[in-house]
Amino acid sequence: MIQVKIFYANNDLRNFSYLIIDKKTGHSWVIDPFDEKPIVDYIKKESLMLTGILNTHQHWDHIRGNSALQSTFNCPILTRQDNQILLDNHQLIKFVDTPGHTSDHIAFYWQKGQDVLGLFSGDTLFNSGVGNCRGGGSVPTLFETTNRLKKLPDSVILYPGHDYVLKNLLFAKSCEPENKEIDEALKMVHDTDTEQGLAWTLGQEKKVNPFFRLNSSEIQEKVLDGELLLDSRASIERDLFTKLRSLRDNW
Ligand SMILES: [Fe+2]
Image (cartoon, rainbow, N blue to C red; front, side, top):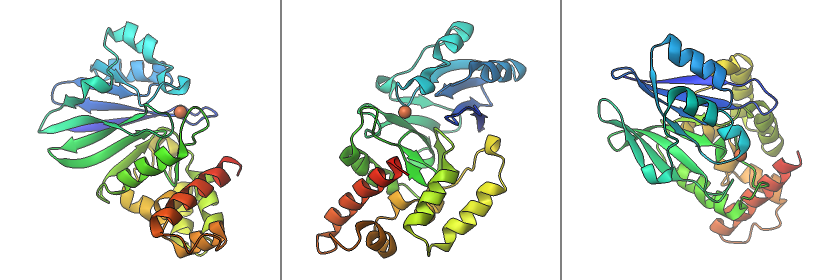
C-alpha cells in the first residue's frame, strides 16, 4: 500500500511538502521538503527509511530541507534523469517535464500501471490557479504545460506545492461571478483544515480553476472584454491565459 503524508509549513509562503510511503517495504521519498524537523520526526516515529529526495524545481522554498535530510538519512537527491521510482503493487512515481514556472520545472505522476492516480505539481498547478512566471519562467510555456495537464483524467488527485486556494478562488470569482461551483469550493475550503490538504481532483479543478476554464464564455467576455473574440479558439485561449496570469500577478 502507498500512503501520502502531507506536511504543511504554516509559513508566509504556505508550502506543502509530501512524503510518499511504501508501507510494505518501509521506504519513503520526500517531495519539496521545506521544514526538515517534522519530516525527520515522522520518519523516525514510523520507523521508515528515507530513500530519496525529490524537488520539483530549485526555488529555495522547495529545496530548503534537502541538505539536513540528506545528512540525517544519507540518501540521494534524485534528478529528472532518474526518470521514475518503482513502488509496491505495480505503482510508480514518474518524473515529467512541466516547464513554465521555471524552464526546468518537473512534476511527479503517481501511477498504477499506466493509470495516473495523483499529480505532485510543485509550482505549476495550484488549487484554482497556476504558478507565476516572475522568477525565470515563461507564460506561453506554462500555457502549453497547463493544457497538457488538463488532459489527465478527472479522477487524478492534485498535490500542489503551496496552499494559495483561498486567494485563488476569490480571484476566480472575480473573473466568473456566475460560477456557483466557486461558492461551493469556498465553503469546502472554509470547512477544511489546511494541514490535511484538500485532495481535490482535476475534475474539481475543471469546475473552479480559471486557467482550466479558458473556454468559459463568461471568463472570456469579462477578462478579454470582447476585444479578441473574433480570433481562432486556440488564440483566444492563449491570450486569455496570458491576461489571467497578468491579472492574478497584480491581484
Ligand atoms: Fe517556485
